[in-house]
Length: 326
Image (cartoon, rainbow, N blue to C red; front, side, top):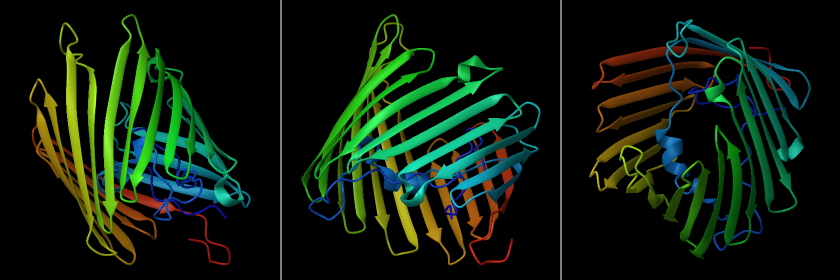
């Protein structure tokens, strides 16, 4: 049976509870018994704690178990400000093979949006990904991408190509230096009239319940008439105090505009629910509460803009084998 997944981020509203995306494919275990991470996953602990599934209005998600590996899901938003008409409905299937080596997810919405995602593990170290998003009424939202990733014993490699009004191509590489330290970087090229190059280098240190990550990026400043280079440094620290409580913080600074920001996040897991919160120096406060039986609450406040959003979630999920219907 497909695993019961937590609600997805709804910046682009998602189908109800598709199977959880498989963890990055691993090769032979590294020195700590864990495979090295792809560069984009260096700060995964910070993102898992700080990134929330926030929405407004009433949201209901329902799923039907069609077969052992196939699930059909529905998502409905009512009274939401995410669309001009105030509502969103999406339907789509989710398929996952035994062991999670193949996963396919599709969605179609009443607003004209269609999207799909495919993940395929190959051999002992390769993972292929492809996704496509098309919108009949808004061509600006059309996007297609494909990538290949390899995870070895102490190093990783990734390559990606995408189309979003322009061709994007990039690659990444990471190397584990010692059991607790991993270094890496990536480079992205945007094929426009004046080719844009975006590069990053970063490091990840993790030991026990402590994780520290940092990255330095360089890209053209689109606000500048001459597109002068803009450098930004980000640092994240994540601390798991016990099995239930996690705390995390992020600091970022950019040069030469000298802009900075800081965020603090927490996550607490009760026996039957999970609470997440985040506050930053931009005046934004957010919180989300999810009950594992299918209820959820969301709240976001932007004090600088005077924007307040609150929402309620109800999930109707297929029962586990042998369990009574919910």
